[in-house]
Length: 256
Image (cartoon, rainbow, N blue to C red; front, side):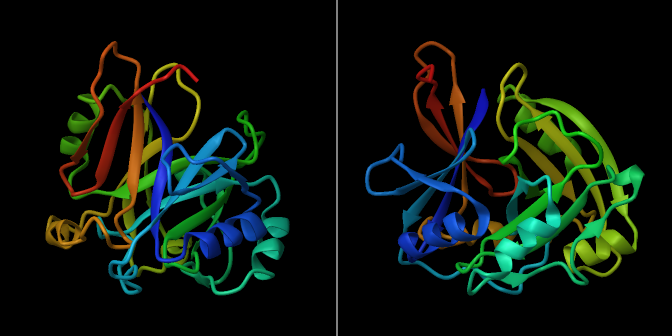
């Protein structure tokens, strides 16, 4: 089981695709699904699906399960931000520019923002020499109410627990645009598979925001989907929700 691509709902896929190409270095490519716009960043894949539903809510905090972002790896944060600044209609989530997190939180430098459709995104530069290919999507981060139960759910899909940390402090507050942010971060990996991984973000705010996630309709811009490829023989494609309402699609791996 591996995370093969991310699907973003868009009211204007062509305009959003132009932003990803101009601001973030993606390239256009054929989409896996007819009628969508396909984008690539190195070996990472993104799909933009046309919808007519509600726009992405602009006031959703990072601890809500509605807030689902993915992180793009860069070697040069200043260069990436300069490129981003030339693109129109995005807006910052982080306050005070890129934030260098403490070593206990991984030591990366990161910056969160929204694309023109409102999807939350992150630029991230790792401390030291990052072993992976760059550019790429490093992970898709999903906010959850309970880390343990989410780990159990995703282990049932074949993912395993990787690095874990408890991130807090003024740098995390500024990165997330949240006062007193305290987030348990858990990486979930597909054994032996390259490509993006899943990160669980638990801000310890309880389960009060779960209903918000469930109220997002499939046709809304906020209904992001993670597509996993399963190499089990004869595995039928299907859709499901995790315990916090995040949308997942499972498809048979074609070996590509």
